[in-house]
Image (cartoon, rainbow, N blue to C red; front, side, top):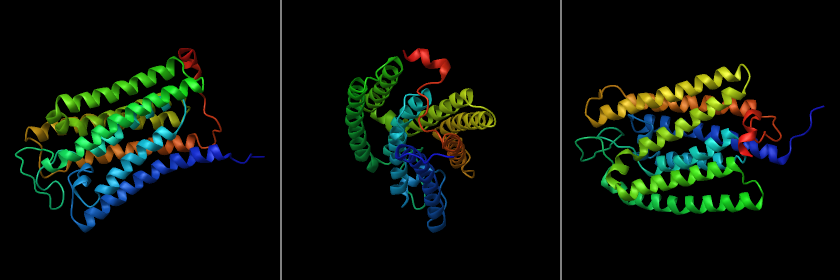
Length: 286
């Protein structure tokens, strides 16, 4: 006889489903803008359209959901670190040229972030730095109070602190460089961490899940490399204007992320209490 699920298990499921819902919401908003206003050259260009609220909201919702999936596994630690980059993708707009979004006009000879966005970036990064620091300190206090502080947890918290310090330091020390490249770097880091999570999942999973995770990880990494090349081509003025290369690369990222997340949700649907660490890594946390 199948036992009824607990409230904790249902919450775990609903948080996972919420991330899938967030991806669908982003896709619907993109389609609405396409139909109502006109084509975009990238998903990130939604920030310059009526879809801005949905784009920002989805990224913050995904960040919160990833952090809410409590656990100390290697996979969860990687997803927690990925969650730190999601708000930066929303706070720092992508660089654009005139025509990258319906009705968008910018006074730039190469891709740039409009000057009108700079106050919002400053406000967002300062807020993120403060809240991120408080979050790490709170997580440390909870780990000690709950007696879960070990080598693995300490390493994850140190990595989180380093990410927050690095992003804040880059913004303060080289604001022009940060504004130009912050969106792409945060996007690349977020998806690379998701790809790493998928690789870890592949190592510990059985077929056919292993194949799915390998395909998703490979697809994400190849898409990040593709977007890096396109980013350089756009900055140097060599990207073909007639082909929305950024849109294609970002769409691939979202599709492979959705594939990975759906696979994880289905595979872990009936888990009542996921293992703290894979057996072969358990000794590392002691």
